[in-house]
Length: 480
Image (cartoon, rainbow, N blue to C red; front, side, top):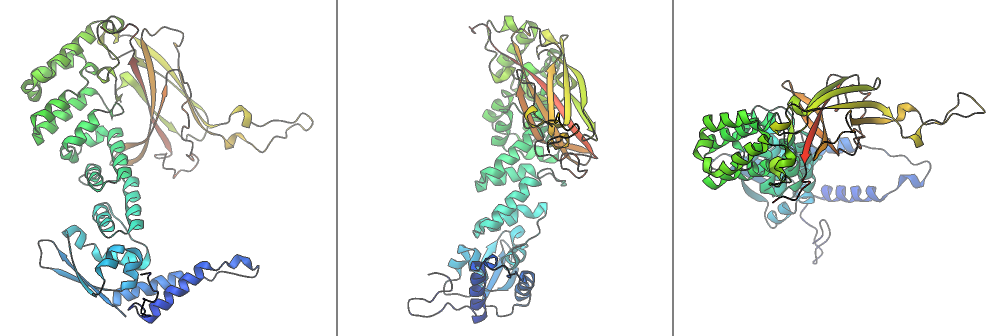
């Protein structure tokens, strides 16, 4: 039956007359086009209407529905006097619950029950305030009662506030929640944030709450941002010690560590000092042996006997100075800047003394040649409407040794953009990656307004970048 329409026997739904007339008036107003008449104008009293609707909820005027909200494992009941029309307009679940009855008892988890009246108020005004601790219970209520607009709104709130400050951390729990709810968009946003800010997550209390599946998923990624592979190994050891997962999981996560990215001296140290590695040494013995072989010979010689095109020999996004440089650009909208830095040729200890110099050029207002001002010969000083101020930010990365043969090594250039400082920490929100053969970082900060001091891309009017050069080995000779 269509809401508000007569039934087959000619009766109207049992809504108050004024509510029915209000609904018809709103529907008629939505179909009128005041622009068809030049003298027409819009008189907007919607805020007054919303205020009156809120008064209805607060005072219980003309209420025709009573919700009794009970917390699970508690005898406490919260009674809310509501209006069937406003509930059923946005929730087909309420529409089903309120068939032939005006009093409904609902059972909710404690964290949802305490927010239920706030949730119902949304039905009357279309607005709700959300805090970090309220996001999951509000999303759960919106999902349970099929309030799609609120569900999407809370999900977007969670994506935007991944870097927000909280006492215990919240991104890991949000990921697990999104996985249970099947919210793939939120799940991917959380996973990306965890990968790009892993050093920060490792040092937080929520690290030990990471599930087995999430840990395995993270360790398979090459875009993890952290100080070094040794930092990751130490964090995994802590996670194993605190959670004591099943043996197959422990073996799987230990075999996901890229031991070839750890120096020989550090490998010797963890073999002797790590209780987890001592206990499960037989599970990773082959990987450790291969890592020592990798460090003891030239990559070209090693590639004759082993396949170097696997994840074990691919660096992650390491923040240590061997693999890149931090670059803080003060007042980035002012003028062009440049930076020179050196990185290690490759992760192999055989190449530890070989360095490559890189040059970075940042321009805040670069224009393609086709868009640059063209000056008229007949009227000196005139130009097209395009100005250099209308250009976009540009970042170019080149090697000062591009003419040399890097002996089976190519380079992946990664640029991290830090935003939203929390508790003195800078979180990574944007990551740009280009191949060695490409000098310019495409679409770099294409939507950023660097002239606004309040820009989300700036911290204290400075642009925080970290440039990482990842050496990638490739087989020149077929592996045996």
